[in-house]
Image (cartoon, rainbow, N blue to C red; front, side, top):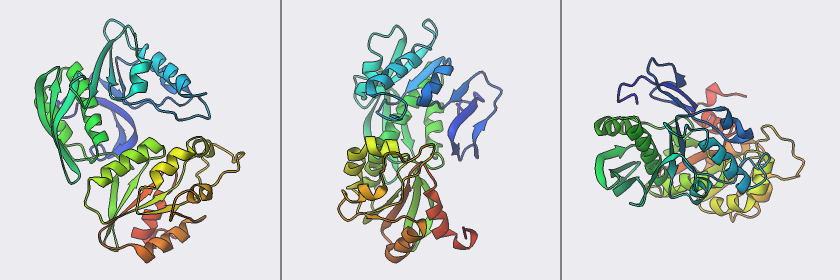
Length: 328
């Protein structure tokens, strides 16, 4: 929308380098908002275009189960005007398509196969960039390059393209808009070099987000992947325990910080030490200082170090890169 000179108002959950903020106030007639299903807060919105990237079991301290979550997303999609609105949906995600089955709204799908209305072909990954053709209902729409890694970002680009098509944005504007996107704060966010290793921070706090992050890292040319993970909330850690274990068995080295409580009290009696016990070679440390000491001991050129989680685990990277500025 910025590349198309539509001057939108924007409100999202992370800082965009393009905006140097998480919001902007424009003079155009389009508002772009990132919404969340937690506590059904997105049901207070009345979108003209609703983009659903995926539906997963999360926030299970509020929702009963995945069926309850799908029901809420169905209600969200039904808030789109039936005559003038559009729902944009990931046709590769079974939960999304199940939630929308039979809905009396205009639906445009995106995905990685020609069964979608908007899809990608000829995908080539080069380092942290991906190049591919975008097709719209069988016709070539644009050839694009994105500079954020991972197949999940290809899907995100397709979702953005589908919304742009609905809004009448030109293929050329989509091409340049996607090429200029540099990611968002705390989303595979490069922080700097530490002892020759590349240090990144990421907000991933759900097993599927971990999977997407690690899949993206697998496409890059690193000798070792070192993950420092801080689980977010006791309820999520307990209810998705096995899924976390599955993903955290993938990196070369895993250090676990204690669970970030956020809004909860530990009535379950769970600890990150429980995760570490199920992950071969993983180590649990109750303090950031201990993890930082380990990273100072082992980090070397050829490593990628990822601080991961929705809490304050990013402070570890800050301490390592700027020790004089962080004496807390």
